[in-house]
Image (cartoon, rainbow, N blue to C red; front, side, top):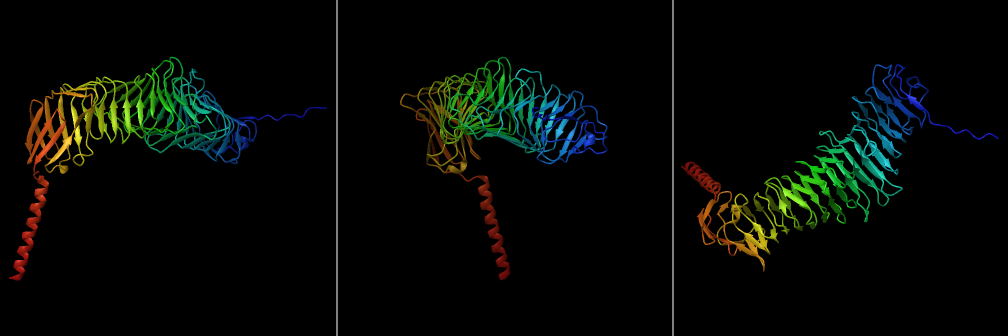
Length: 528
């Protein structure tokens, strides 16, 4: 008895021999009409006058894989959606292969993108229930291809553990968005320990302006989840000009075993770290560079890598503890830590040529022996020093008092020693000053000490600008009808006298009087 024969899917190679450019036209292929389950191959041979090809096949058609051979023309695919049950391989260097179709992914595998190739997806990619997808070949392969996601892409993994989207290879680049659209990539999972995004090898992820990438992996309590770099001697890079979000079940590891791995949050870019039960780990070969905004509720930061404030803002959305082994530095006078009503503790010393702005209510506690040389501004909340801190030269302290007297103003506290050797600028919103207020700007703790030695103290506001004169740690001066006395020993600034209205207020008063005189004159003329 003969065994039943098994049908094998065909491989169809595009020839473009028919007058149309339709996938559904049998004469355009070297074999016959496409059958569901066939794989497609594109080469340099194309008898058609156009390289824009249209899919009018049924949207349930399964394509077992698409390959662009070396030397293939640059094609643009349009028309109906299709199911991709295999992978996409692009070996056509120097041209762009473009898909405007929506594609449903139903199979895991490695998408090989050879060096110098470009593959653009303007349609939407969707996935549900398959294993890991690797973009760019093996970790150390010479790939170097560019992949563009310009649509709305939703990848939801299920059916197993540690399933992820992995970008890897040598020089492989994934661009989400083109800088002028709202492209998105959302990665999630419906089963435990899946739905992560790993950027490995020497690959690069660019989240363009206006675009977003969201990683909502499911909770994994024992191992790192999403990572940037994990191969010895190689460096992966993520550049954020749009928004990159790691969800509640997703931790993040930057760097691993040598190389130069970096997550760059550029000016205008936003990094959201929402995993309250997770840890952010920056390894010795990793760096988080912040020129934009980082919103973090992660709670715990570990590792020996670099956290560099490049004029951006680190904003707490929950209490934060940044470990004593991190290498934290500031390179700009506008580098900001916004405690946002939460307690933020930094155990390591902050270094660098930049300054530090303490913003938001809540307390920022610095426990390291900080050596950064820029200015220090307390614009709101409390800056607490748990180690000696020396102000000298350009390293000046700015206290911003912008609320009601006695509440909601910048405060500096210390449980150690603060050595005054620079200048103090006290910035007020002048509308809160009328005379008779007292502001406590410095609060030495039970074991804290303030060593006098300011070289200058100034008062600034929208119409108050004055420099105080100092003698034995007491600074005094007058401006706009107000008398100022600041004591280094107590940290109190007292305001006496009576504020003279701002010039704008005078103008309003004189304007009202002038209008009144005009009305009176008109009434007198009418009566006459």
